[in-house]
Amino acid sequence: MRKMKKSDSGTYNLPVRYGPEMRVLIVGGGISGLTLAGLLQQRGFRPTVAERAPEYGSVGYIIVLWPSGSRILKGLGLYRKLLDTGLPFSTYNVWNEKGEMLRSYSVEAVTEKYGPMISIYRPELINILREAVAPESIRMNTTVEKIRQTRTRCSSRSATAGRSHMTSSSVVTVCARRRAAWFSVMSRSLTAA
Ligand SMILES: Cc1cc2nc3c(=O)[nH]c(=O)nc-3n(C[C@H](O)[C@H](O)[C@H](O)COP(=O)(O)OP(=O)(O)OC[C@H]3O[C@@H](n4cnc5c(N)ncnc54)[C@H](O)[C@@H]3O)c2cc1C
Image 1 (cartoon, rainbow, N blue to C red):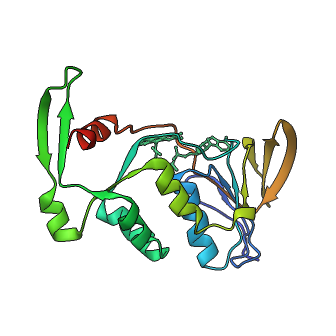
Image 2: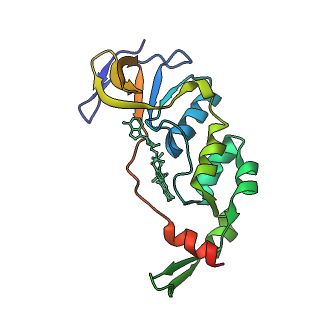
């Protein structure tokens, strides 16, 4: 075990054993949570993903992966699937509510140098990423309600299908951002193309 040190930010670095026995709880099984779980599993860890949605459904529209993002799927062995499922795009159009195009940006300078930008339907990207994660490590219908860090561990309170329970982990990582970027404009321009 490593000795606990206080970091610059004032929080304690927990005495974590780095190895497959390290217990990692990932809060949120969206794009970043599933990606992290896949990468950790690839490295021999067995993380648990808590996802509050009861199931993965047809939610969301189009996500655009820049070449730097796609590279992560390459590392997970999922790049071929991404190319087969998504659509490369070279122009970003902005429309107003009357259907008039306001702006058109070419992204070719990026794609020529670094590789394709891929637009993909969010549920399809989620399905691709789920292939990298052992199904039994994803706990659906589980909402993490509280996380507490003590000097020796992280404890979290979750509710699975309404029933509350506590979990103790070496590391808890929160991958549950609010819905920030919606590319409805993008999906519209794809439909119009
Ligand atoms: C349903 C949905 C649809 C989206 N559609 C689009 C889209 O069409 N286009 C676009 O560009 N972006 C969309 N986004 C946003 C986009 O996915 C994210 O901004 C971006 O991918 C960041 O990914 P993320 O993994 O950090 O968060 P998300 O992909 O947002 O995933 C976060 C996950 O955490 C879960 N979660 C949240 N709080 C808790 C909790 N307390 N306990 C357990 N689980 C929790 C959520 O249910 C969600 O599945 C959408 C997000 C969501 C949740």
